Image (cartoon, rainbow over all chains, first blue to last red; front, side, top):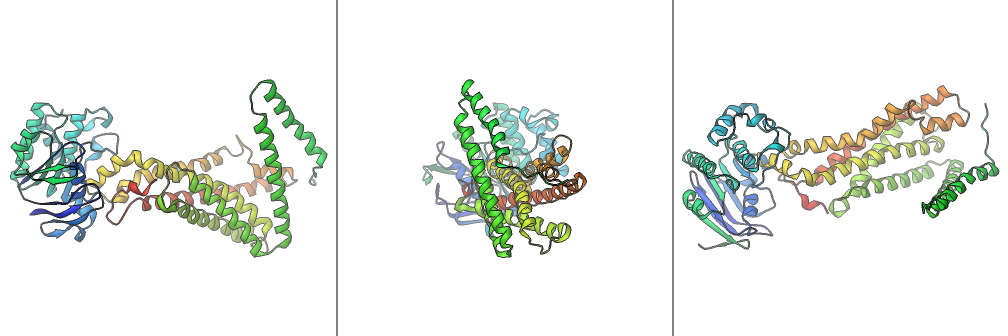
Length: 199
Length: 263
C-alpha cells in the first residue's frame, strides 16, 4: 500500500510530489497559512485538484469520492459535528472500539453521552481522531491532532498513532512541533508559501 | 343576494380613512405620511391597471393571451424566489432554479385543478385560470423563496458538519440531508399555518371576497378548501424542487461541497 502524489496542485498550493508507504509517517511542517491544510484537503479530494493522486496504484478517479475518502481519511484541525450528542456521530458497530480508544486517550468514560457543545477543544480533537480511526482507513491525514492537548494526552495520542502505524497505517501528519515531527516522521515535507521547500 | 356594486363615491369615502392615517402621522410625527400616500396611490394605480388588463384578457378569451399573462406572472414570481436569499449561486443559477421550480409547481397544481375539480369550459378560461394561477403563485413564491434561502444562506454555517461527514466517506446527499430537510420544512410552515388558522384565526381572503360578492358561504368554503389543498401541494413541490436543485448546484462530480459556487 502506497499513497502517491505527483504534481499535485491547485490555485493555492503545490506542486507536491511524495509517496508514503504503509506504516510510514510523512510529517508536513511550515508556518501558519503556508498551505499545509490545503495539501491535506487535496489529498482527501475535498477541493478540486490537478495532478495525480493514487492509493495502492489505484487512481483517485478510479473509485467513487466516498470510497476514496473512506480510505484516505482527513481529520481537520477543527473537526465538524452534525448532531447534538457525541454518540450520534458513531455507527453502532464501532462503539466498542470507540470506547476502548477513548480510554486510551484519557477521555472520561461517559464522554459519548455528552453534548458536543459542552466538550472542550481537546476532547473534540481526540473524539474526531477516534471517529476516524474506528472506520479503519488505509491512510489517515491529521491536521495538528495534538494542538489543544496537555502533555500526557499528547503522549497518549502519539503512542496510539505509533501502534496504528505498526499495524500498517499510512499517516500524513501536519504539525507545528519540530520535536513531534522528529519523533513521528519517517519523511518530512516543509511548505513555505504553498511550495515544497527542500529541507 | 346580488352583488352590491361599489360607486366612485363609496371609494372616496373609504379613502378618507387614509387621510386620517396621514393626519395621525403628521400629528404624532411618525414621518410615515409620505410613505402612506405613495403606497395608497401605488395600490390604486396597480389595481386599476390589473383590472383593465384582466378585463381585456377576459374579453379576448384567447388561450394565447391567457398563456402570455400566466407566463408573465410566473416570470415575476420566479424572479422574486431567486432574488430573496442573501446568497446566490454563480452564473445566475438562482434564476434558473426559481423559474423551473415555480413554473413546474404552479403549472402542475393549476392544470390539475382546472381539469379535475373546477372544470371550466374551455379548461383554460381566463376567468378561472388567471386568478387561480395568481393565488397558487403567491404560495409558491413564499415556500420557494424560504426553502431556497434555507439552503443557500444556511450552507455556510452548516459547512463544518457537512464536510465532516464527507471526510468520513458519507455521500454528499447523506451529508446534506439535514440542511435540505430543514429548508423544506421551513418552506412548508407558512402553508401549514395558513391551513391550521383558516376559519378560526383568519377568514381567508378568497372566501371573504366570494361571500362579499354574494356567493353562498358553503360554496365559498368549498372553493377555499380546494384552494388550500392546491396551495399545500404546490408549496410542497416547489420547496422540495428548490432545495434539492440548490444542493445539487453546490456540489461537483467528486461529491465535494463547493462553496465557491456561491457568491
